[in-house]
Length: 300
Image 1 (spheres, rainbow, N blue to C red):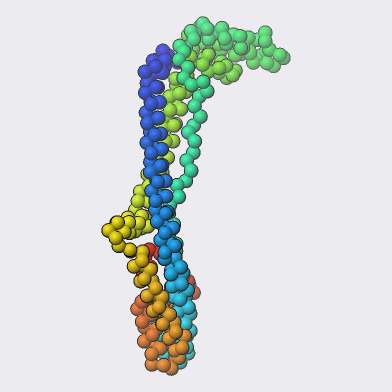
Image 2: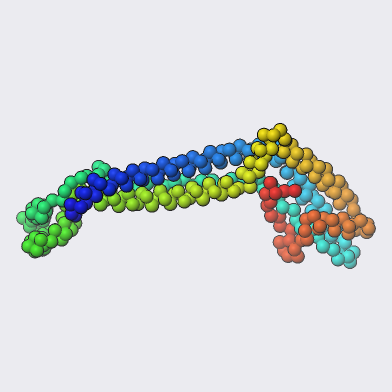
């Protein structure tokens, strides 16, 4: 390492660390914005479900019974030689689900001891440390002595050509403290800051994507619309509940008729036709009667 490493630690790293702290604060603010908005919308979803959930469940049950009645009626008509189109299976009402924020990973571990602002040792100091580490007289057996002799030969040759990088590499291979070999750990701190910045930026993209999805969620838009209506004295949830009760009464009447219609009745085909107009025609396949979930806020 060179003295520019020390200069970097003094003039650049603290500023970069400060920028990382600002990024972390902005990330925290965005996470709090998501959690605050999600809590607000979840409170509305709970109120929405309490006001309308039972009505949707009853309506779903009636639609399912109606589908069975019209299915049997269509089969009876076909047995009588009448070609009819059966209605599509009803879609079960799905309760609103809000996006969940995945947990964030911790930042990479900072180099121990924080920033060490220390000038690199001289070439002679490195040579002496290498000699202490690698001298053949400190070998415990013949094989190790041979290895040390070869390593010291490399150290002597590197010292003769003033190649501190070679001596530093040999020292680090023996387990020498990198700070004693390279001086201050500004490069390590700089690399850690880079990894931490990437981690914060990646997490920020995730948070902002979830925040955007929540802001554009149908239940958030419905929450805003109903809140505005309630602020001027209206009762939109009450209106929606009344509308669902009317639909329930209508389906009950349809079910009463559908369960009693006979294939020979002149009203049978008209009844099926009205159901097909409202539900759509069933596809002719093995999966023609499979139900697909629908969103509660999109139900009629």
